[in-house]
Length: 79
Ligand code: FES
Image (tube, rainbow, N blue to C red; front, side, top):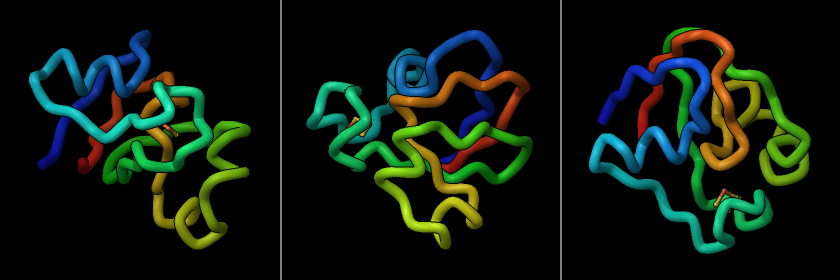
């Protein structure tokens, strides 16, 4: 499923607000790596926990951890 996410809200919170969800077994602390989403339009900064949990290949493909993401521009993601 694709979602267009606004700025100023943490991404996993926004996903929940739409009635959807991503798995968050670590409670959003950034250490389970389960809340992956893929950016398909726009840019989402790579967070410190993204660098720890995700491979270089995943980062290059636009994979990010939703619990660590706060969009600075509107982004379209796939969950
Ligand atoms: S919820 Fe665990 S890394 Fe995001």
